[in-house]
Amino acid sequence: MNLGLQTREAFRQSATAFLDEMPRGSGVLIVDFTATRDVDSAGLSALVMTQRHATDRGQRVMLSHVGAELEFLLVLTKLDDLFQFAPTAG
Image (cartoon, rainbow, N blue to C red; front, side, top):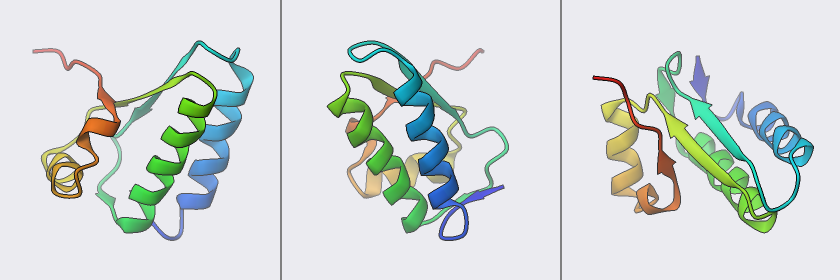
């Protein structure tokens, strides 16, 4: 699966819906990237918009199973400080 131009809107809508189901001021949305092979700039934009929505509601977005390529992209774009990362086993 990819998070990009073709999938960003569906991702954003689903993530926003999950956040809206949680009470304001609490809740964590965990985005699991285990099955995600590629994230492009449109996908990054969807993640940032989701994080912004969560922040506006007093919630958090946590990224899980982030691969080396996505981690590098987040660092390169200075977005790594915007997200929390779930601890990985091992």
